Length: 426
Ligand code: HEM
Image (tube, rainbow, N blue to C red; front, side, top):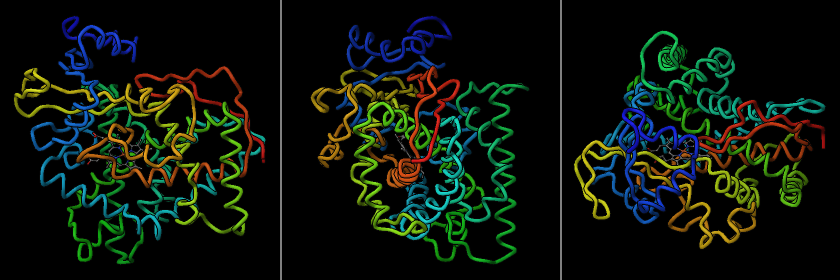
């Protein structure tokens, strides 16, 4: 378990996936370590990972760091279990149902992407920054409709501080990311409370996520204002880094694979040909984007946007013949399965065509969107956002990398100094 306090955190962060592979070679697919401040069981066994994700009721609940739970709020979905989780999840699913996507969310996403992707011609763009802004502002528009434009500017810097805070050590001292993140949460809560109060006074009805959450007489899920606010923060947070990083990495892979870009562009030009320039992307268009969906799955797999998920034990239990003490964290590490040659031939190559066989999406060991009782409810919404972004990006522009930007793959996929591209119109 390494050194006191630090355990094996340094090795884990420095060697990344190789640390995990070496430990597995020495100790097997289930081993203990001490990383990121906690005694942790790492599970790299696909069967066991599935079992853990399916068996929350047996005492395998989310095990996210305290800083994250403090800042996302006590009603956020990762902080609640059992029947409360079911209720909160039901409320989220109601907001992003297929009919909500078709009637209210997709039109907002389309409108947002058209504007967000305008005027990039002849510019050098940091695509990491642009996709982060996009993920946050597109969600805000879905949440608060036209009201989002009046809160965007105040919201954005606070949200970025909140995200940093959730990934920090929970040290409540002036100047720490944790303290700043916590303060940012308070400011965000104030902004959202104001919006809720203004809407109550105006009595106007709104066809956006907040409008749905506030319509308590029509909505089967009745939430308090505090719960509504935590749900909104959860939705913003869960879709933020996942959608933005997948979009950025899709741009990267498309740049490096011209044949894939060509096929993707053909798909989108064919859609555009059927429509007038001002016609928005609708659900039928989205359904016809089969290759785009394949590009998104292949990007998530090859870049491994999500390395795994965290659980903890609520009681002492036996897993694969080992006794795991109560309260230990379990890192359900799913990265390796993305490169399994039995599932993906030539696993290190970027080959979206492999996903054109739909059965690959339903295989048992696909954990890109998690699994079991907490499988991502925002999967189709996230795919809709990334697809609409790619639609306007590849039909409007061509691009080349400025070059020299460093891309980190672990512990998170990010470009520490941005990913700069030179854009010109197509
Ligand atoms: C490419 C995009 C996305 C990826 C790769 C992704 C991935 C994931 C993963 C792996 C989990 C499981 C976490 C766990 O088991 O602890 C999850 C859960 C979740 N995701 Fe997503 N996600 C994406 C987009 C979104 C979007 C757009 C939303 C917005 C509604 C969203 C909302 C959620 C929520 C609320 C949960 C928690 C579910 C629960 O605990 O029951 N996700 N996501």
